[in-house]
Image (tube, rainbow, N blue to C red; front, side, top):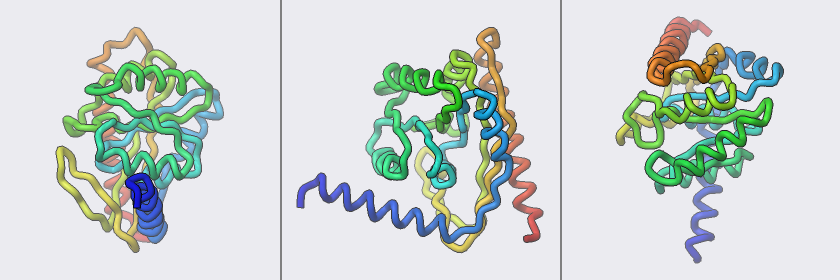
Length: 217
């Protein structure tokens, strides 16, 4: 069996497993109108979630037309191929490899009104929960809005690398909150924007965790 065929089989099996794991969870999704209304009003949106929680959002938005940024390292290959199988368009690159080409593709996609770009601001290699400057630059250049996004789940596996990466177990509940859109214009200081994004991500996580811990359903 060729390596190419082995890889295709691996992608198909992994895709099925993820659909089963996430499909057997109940989901509570709040704030979806935040990105939908932005799109309706002609804005492009950047969905931002920390790297460790990306799988829940990939599954939640699997039926949307999404462009997504992923690193070029081998660990990102499988998730990228699954996302492509689910209909996403992947942009591969990082600050260490292919960054300028990837950035140009990001800008091209965001200049189309109503487009969605998915980014893990701290990916692909960290530091954990510290956004890379690219997300701010892209938003400032294209007038796209950033949607800070949070995920919590009641049942999951956690895998430690530079990050704590989560895969949700079946038969739990996944809580997703899409926050209010954030705009950063070109005149704003980039370091201040990064600090503001960190605080916005922190607030949406706090809101989502509070809701998760007090949900009686």
